[in-house]
Length: 325
Image (cartoon, rainbow, N blue to C red; front, top):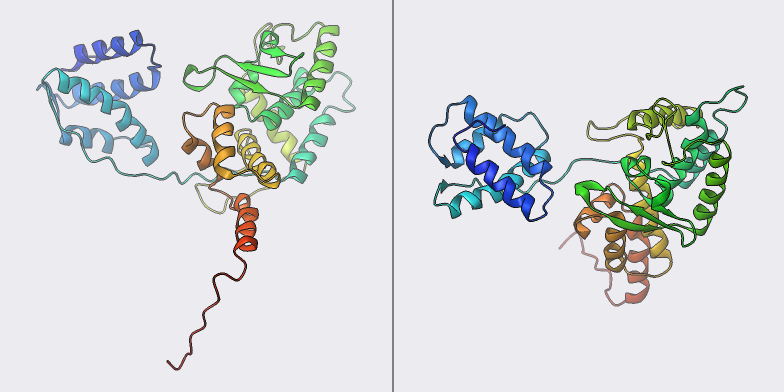
């Protein structure tokens, strides 16, 4: 419910976006915040000025990159108001670089996690559902670069075991995409399906919770299990800066991106060619979203630099300066 002087325009704008098939939840959230600000500070003039937007965004106790996203959501609404001859002034949009630093697992660390996950419930008389099914989810997250929510919401109707294809139906911003699997992961899921069907569990979803039958596990259930597996695998970590995330399930997606680039680099493919295909595989809006996954590590560029050096040879000589000159 919008209550400000611009409530009618906000409702009409959202209805216009909805009719056009746009995903509006993030835009609605930003406009709801702006609407609350207008109402709280009694802005009674039908306008959207730079001072209003600046005071609104300054009041938000969030990261700068989140503020930039909120301003971007409101930008379209501002253009809509302008088309209605309503006075609009947009503030200058700052260029904001994310300071987020993900944790990238090494291949050795991931193998330690897999071993710990497979043996986590060993020796327990009645192992829990999570100890049975989460080792498979762990492999899917790493092997396909899925978001945790995408993995947990997978249904068997989304899995084409004959062709090795996963259909992601409810991705971020309500997008859909196809995700090819490796042969080894396809074979593993085939065995997993036979196993859970024989136990009459996970009949609809791949990872159905025993707490809520026929419903998938919640994110926090996997988080709790994941932390225990990290501890069992002796993967310890202390943040060097406040922006570092530390090991978490989403870092498996970052690890997938980096390792994919390294594999492609080793096979001689160009960085820009790989980026375009991987962006579509991950469900990103653009290659920029994929490239930022690499900011934490320059390892992916090492082989490229070496190939350039080998190609150039001694074309560019070293230059030495006499300290006396």
